[in-house]
Length: 286
Image 1 (cartoon, rainbow, N blue to C red):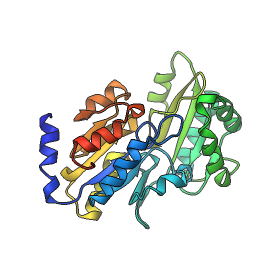
Image 2: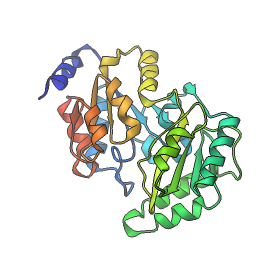
Image 3: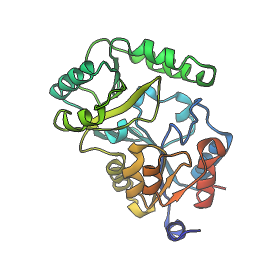
Image 4: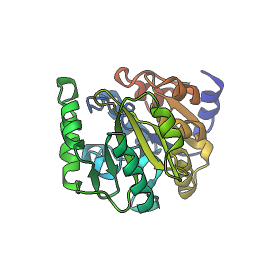
């Protein structure tokens, strides 16, 4: 066991831990399946008195009811923009109307399709639903039909006045990185997205001052739990700050290099019981 894991385990006798679990690629597979081992490990951690939180780039309308059935105590959504503990909303940061208008123009000029993701509404750009449905219309992606069913009641037409974040699928072009680096509206940052679809580059856009890591601090302070008594587990670029801030950061085995380098420990991939292995090794689950 490395020194970071040994140090973290020494905190377990001091009280409950705040555990922040990413969804896609951590709690669920690309097929939208929760490994049985992950179900058992999450329930075991709760039985031991630890506080479990979903921590995702997804917004509230994108959370399957069956995930809430696992008994999570709260939610960090939109990559950190929205924070809720039980029924108490601790943060609800959103892009402004001016930022949305400017970003909408940039993405339209790039011939992208994109989804504005909000706390209570989802605004697809023209062509997004058809694009995403076609991209996920494969036997191995059948689980994504549930996603379409869950978000359908929240679909609204047109560009929103205010929203949490945006996920865009952008056709490849030689200078795309330069465009996204130098031509974004003020106050917006982008990170590589985790849900690929078709032959595109996927990017997530959100307020530049928010992150999962900063929002974890809000939750810990609200619960009165020292930040070194927290665990973050994830596999995507929007998990990097969380892995760095947590008392112990765990990257899934299939995570990109930059994500794994930010972690204290790298567990097995999601399809090989990585979440359960990590919780067991940390002493959080049996």
